[in-house]
Amino acid sequence: MSPRKRLTVRPLSPIPPFRLKLTFAILCFSLLGLLGRVGHLQLIQGIALESRARNYQTKKIEPLGKRRSIVDRKGRLIALDEKRYRLYAHPARFKFQGDTQKTIRTPEEVAVKLEGLLPISRENIIESLYGKESGVKLIEGLKPRIASKVRELSINGLDLEPYPQRTYPQNHLFSNVVGFLDYDRIPQAGLELSLNKYLLRKEKTRNYRFGRDGTPLPTDIEAGVFNQDDVHLHLTLDARLQEVALKALVEQLEDWKARKGVAIVMNVDNGEILALASTPTYNPNKYWEYPSNLYKEWSVQELFEPGSTFKPINLALALEEGVIEPNGTVYDSGVVNVGGWPLTNWNKKPNGLLDFAKVLQVSSNVGMVNIIQKLNPSDYWERLNQLGLSKAPDTDLPGAIPGHMKEKELFLRQPIHQAVASYGQGFSITPLKLVQLHALIANGGKLVTPHIKKGFAVKSPEKNDSSRPPKMLLSQTATKTVLSWMESVVENGSGKDVKIENYRIGGKTGTADQTQDGKNYNTKICSFVAILPIENPQFVVVVAVDSPQKAHAYGSTVAVPVAKKIIESLIVIEKIQPEKNEIDLISKKNW
Figure 1 (cartoon, helix red, strand yellow):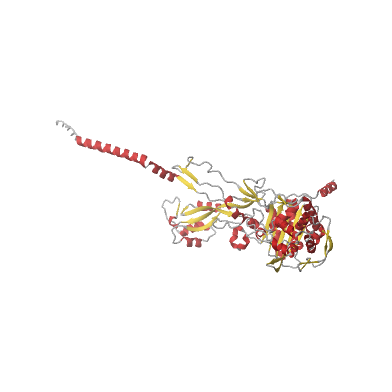
Figure 2 (cartoon, rainbow, N blue to C red; figure 1 turned 30 degrees about the vertical axis):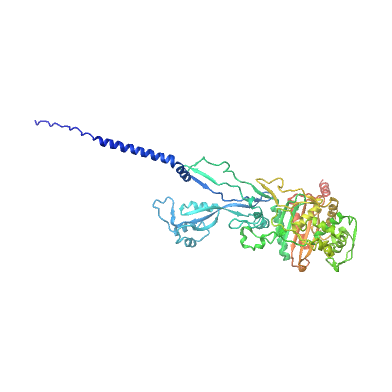
């Protein structure tokens, strides 16, 4: 047997002490460096790094600049903001989300996907995208439903930008009052302009913090940031009555080939305007298709001579001054000379001896001149001035202008001015002012403030926020007498076509020649004023039609038919009860 080999184990050579020291030193210096770096980051750069982290975690959402909605007296929407989207394309970033190969898609492929969703042809989409890298606006005005479908395509490089778009669901119905916003959301007319700062919603910038997985963190959220501004602007207007008034006006203007027309309905006790319709008008959703002269509301921004519709006002002033008695009379010879000027009736015929109700029924110019000549000219001018003929009506309707009246010195020096003013000529006012003055007759002499704004609230406010105590300008005795005379105009005079069975209505027609700088332009304004119900006046209705072109155009033939349609609807909408005596008769008959 061979002898077994023995293994020899050599002892390890000892590590040199300087290596251990070097290694230990390196580890200590590394640890000190690490601690120093941590300290530097924590103590010196900590605030800056925390701010950077917060910026990565926080998303800042700016408010869209929405506006408050506008609604009528029953809460029907007149103006509101709706969310719309602009679609931008960035061709350099085109790829389908989830595409593992990161394949860049061509404009043709994207156009195929979008063609069925957008009202743009494939060719136009390709033309818009080709050769561009970023920032191509394909379309705007996308509704949320379409935007959602575009988002579902999951194409990188397509961005949807939300924005509010002002829309007017009633189209042209309230454009003369509400106005509109232009493309840049700058108000251009109406309440949108005059109440701009009040229509802006109170919105806050929102900052959201997100965790690593995108979960919102409930920290650093300001109090009230999620509160919504649900306040609306509530108007006194009624969409149903407004539609009836506008439709009746449009039909009458077409029939008589007139230039323009206006209809106003107002509550005589508080000045709330239920309808303010004028035509021609425009669609605020497509304002760019219409001439800019249609953007103003001529019932408050243009003047006209009221003509015979002012005669009841003058009779009330004569009663107040005590120059006539309720049962008195006046003689109408058919012509009266004033300062060398022969003034005649509208039909050039005399009417003989008239009581004052008959003066209104036949619309006697000569009779009115003889009545007003009994007034002291200075007192008469002061009375007219007290009515505010030369002042802008106190109203919240935008753009209201003052009327025009002769200076007192001229008025007193030339008697012709007092004479023609007796039948509503020689001065000019707005249709709104005429409504306000006839409300004086209806409510017992109070000068109420015409207005269309009830206030800003979530729900319809019970009281108007701008109501003021009215001034008393006429006595109830005088106004009640004039009301009875106006009722006779509807029963036996030029307003008989507005009669409605079982309802007592007062009225006065007017037909005034239009003049400018003393020149007659052979055009007329045909008007009619109605007050109802006479036993307890609640509403005044004014209709004026400018420049009817057909023959036999008078207030009775042009304006009265419009007023009747409005009054019929007003009775139904406001549930105006028939005369009490008629109710008793109907009840007995049914029994």
